[in-house]
Image (cartoon, rainbow, N blue to C red; front, side, top):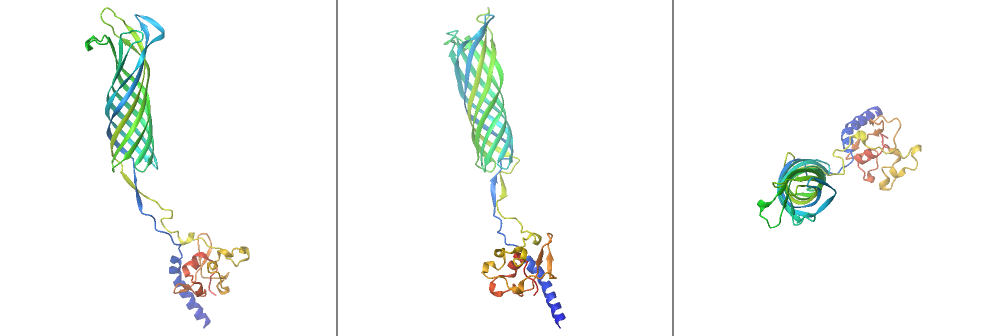
Length: 350
């Protein structure tokens, strides 16, 4: 009779393994909702406009075929005005960092002059009518706000004139056109106000260095000379861009919990607090929260056949349950089977 009763209890226990094991998984909070984040990746094009100020200093290094050393300064002047143009580029965002390349071309009307200190009353005039920038960018994005720096090469078209003040334009007797190369550095900020649209501001400083200009003369060789001209430019621009090729907003999942609960093989098993090797670990017993020690009849037997082996070779006892309460456990503890099985190794068939 006892053999049949033991067999019946064993079959009942095996039937309870699946639901009890599935319920043993620890509880996890649901992941937070996806948050839209602005993405700066993609090809973009736009227009820009603003103003600039070029600073130019002239010095005579040769006059009437005779070298002048050191150079005789003719003075400096600022050539200011407006500019308008366009830009085309590509950006790639990695985490919060944004990398990019860009080409920009502008028409300009930067013009200024001064009376030559060495050859008064002759007036020297500088005019910049176009320029182009070819730069790399490195930026840091805070959602739809982008802060960036840039550096690269620049090319500008200059025109230098020498004339007598008050004379008509046709009386200009010395004129030189030059294409000058240099480099530029700049900083900017850009704000994405729509999914693919952004607006921003930018400052650039252009270094054009020093170059020599050989001025032509009137018939008869009037006042031929060579000037060494040093020049740089400061510019402020407002830009509007439209971007293709990348989503304006991407979805990210912000959560501090795993997306899936771990498998039963990875559930942490508390050590048996009643073993000699684990004295002093009573605070980790499954009944510690209730303030009562585990009943003696619930202690694990070494030869308990109703166990589950995990991949870490730790034994998880399996108990038959009734209304969620393990048979042999103390119903007054208020602890349901999932908690007992997931947190303890101390239960078995009495």
